[in-house]
Length: 458
Image 1: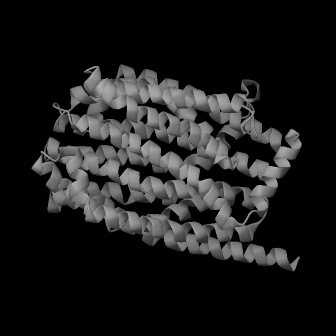
Image 2: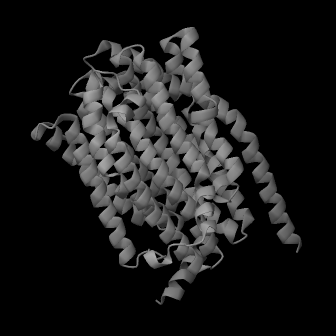
Image 3: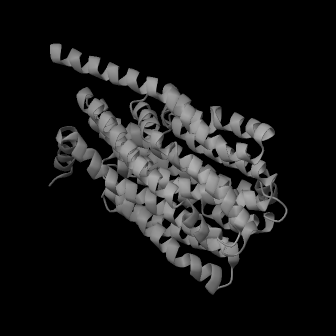
């Protein structure tokens, strides 16, 4: 089959396959990829937690740093991926190659800049992220190796998203998933076998990320993608960079604010001791694991919506939104119920010998489980607007959960209700985000129905 015939076959697949089946086919590998990524973050937390409460707190501190790295990678990945998807849907292959190449090499450059700046100012950076004096040594040992891996991590996120937006999510999952499994295997070897402690967890993560990067890059170089990564195709036109950034802006807000929110959470939790920091860090990793399921579903939905919106198949976009929101709500309800019922046992696996960590974490985890089913709707709303180039609205919704609502809540509530305010800030933020997101989603669905009706009249 020639390259032109392959592209035609991909176009037919993305615009004619029944929507529920297409979303499911694309979502399964992305869900697997997200779950594996979240699982090895949990593995880091689990193994490091065995070293003590302060070490467990360090994982939560460095998670803010990893959120910054993810913000860069996902902003450029989703920004360039969305545009590539629209170009491929409109059969503009040359423009797609330019955007993909620009996003990839820009990610490498920004990742390298973060490595240098973060390494020079690592102690102030860890303190800024909420490290106490007892947590700081562990956070420093962990963070310095994560910083070294920043360029390949950023670029890997871009390549993974490019595959996903082409409708080839399984290829991205191969790279990310392999690295995630490797990380789980290497963690105990480096932490306990080599006696490297928290630094061992970071080294295991850095090696795993490098392996993922090499696998993904090999897939691109061997022609598995519909686009090529060529430094000669990197844009010299500022408009291309602006379009990538503007399209990825909702992701920047979502991921960047996640880092800021985690810092604010750590700083406020630190007022109640290392046990509070450790408890909220562990709960955060568990919630990230839960949220990764609906995020993976949404990432399977986005290429379907973006590709078909570019192809002017508005009825299919509407159907994809309805399917994703419904399935996401059902899945998150089931997961939330299971974790609510077994929250004590789950937290006990991390720090079962610390009664204070267990008590603080159980309340926070159960409160979060009550609102997690809402994420099926809020995630669909945000991603639907983003992948159809409604960047302003999508950016606003992305800011709500971890920014507009969470930051004021986590700063103000503890003044009135103490530690309970720290524990309830995220659940209340999620409830408020649903109230704002739902009208945006319903309005867009009505617009799609009108656009579809207009096509039928023509």
